[in-house]
Length: 184
Image (cartoon, rainbow, N blue to C red):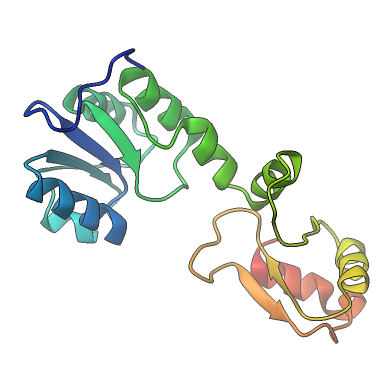
């Protein structure tokens, strides 16, 4: 990462956004109002940010040609969602300031890493248990002794990859099917 990034208020600032969803669209619109250009790297031309971005790269996030092209066009970068390959994040950060950092994004990509980070840094968080088997689920439900939420560790967002548990389910009987439905 360059030691002294170009300030956002300069005419030479070009913000790169990895991801083209609603947040990418809002970033591009806000940047435009400030006279800042945007390059949106998205996985599909139907993404909402495509309509308002100054430039669009429509290739997978692990495409090396797209990565080089993206890095050559931008002066600073951010992500629109967290599920970007770590190698891509690190390569972008080596080329331009990336906010949040690759480490922060990598932690947020996985609920187990995220919760452990919070615990290790003594940051308040809800109780959690890592579930890898029906036995883990049974132990967690016994300790929780009430309703809870079973969530996948990876790729869950906006309510996807999770199931509300009432606390009355039999984890030995329904655990495997619940875990399969969530993606555990």
